[in-house]
Image (cartoon, rainbow, N blue to C red):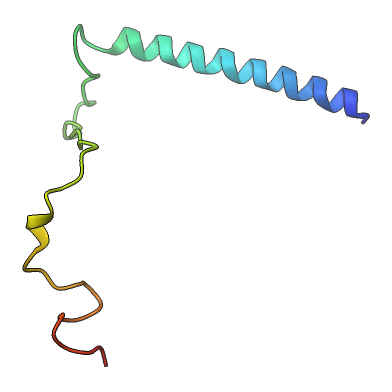
Length: 76
């Protein structure tokens, strides 16, 4: 194949991917309840949203570094 043929194939595949993603987004939007995230399928637990904010560092003040041992001792 020539370079032009390769570029044409890439463009065609990319356009097909964009159309598929748009169809998927439309399907998800139709399935989502009004004003909320999609419901979990029957038999599955509901999804839990994990915030992007960092955890409070005081949660870890008394913990040891896992796999490294206690802070006041040397690893074997």
